[in-house]
Image (tube, one colour):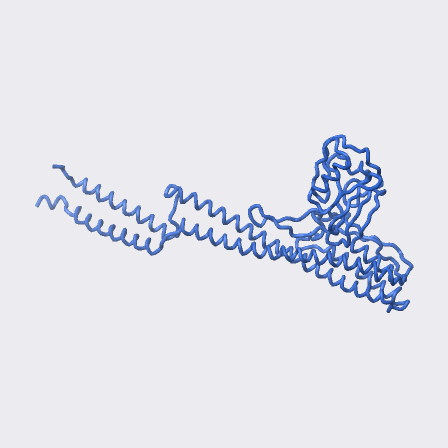
Length: 420
């Protein structure tokens, strides 16, 4: 028979009481925090899943922030392009009226010229619009500098025709062709802007080199960039191979060879071609397309290149000059055609922005659903069943009270009880 002493009874009682208190402490902690894991050793697998879910929630919240910013930027671009569209409509009205010869000499030479000059100023202001962050929304990655704060720089000249005084005779784009991308999902990006060399261009551009390149062959491996896309040129590549590489690069630019073995580049959608020799390369310079003295874009086309096509600003300037001269034939034919082409390009870009806005809206809905799904998984992993936990705590509390009551009976006898 095992001998049971008072010390053994006391130790057993203390052990049970401590065990109950530890269990009650854990249950109380779960009820107080709403979480079923206090330290990783409680449930390593659940802890790992919780870390994964919380990291995913943080990632999703950043994507939601990026989507909201993208929607705001796209709205800025859309509103600005709508302003440009209204100017185009007014310009077209003036062109139609001028083509019908309804203006008097004074209206044609002074009043109309004054109105178009003001719309030119407004169009340049629209092109130089800055967003909420202070960056030009049509400047690509160009943020502006002290010398050149805006991507579009107007050129003025004194014009005596129509008593115009200092009037705009040209506009140069000093921004770049970079896109402003935002990551809106894992591996998914959305372009939140349009470079100015695309949106404010009226016609396709054609660059025709005057250099005979029939005997040309690249001396080394080089890289050229057209509209920001890199094309690798291998040592020994001749004009025909370079033309093929450009045409298979997936660009909105097609290359061809002229009758004098010269390079011809033509856009397939209205924009100003962006040309650049990467690093120390000379391919585009040697083909007579890039200015060797000023090789960096923009406005780095060689002076011998024949440039075809025009921007919306040049189109408006040409219309103004034709209206001042009263050339109804050119106004009703060439100028109206150019206005319609520029208008179509503006509408195309507005449609593109609208499509991106719709995509951003759908992305926001999809991302919100993903966040809710992860939150549900996190809740199931780390959350507790409150009703069940309350019942468990009450049960532990009852057991603890019973243990205390039993212990009180067990350790109640004293030495005096044994001496009686």
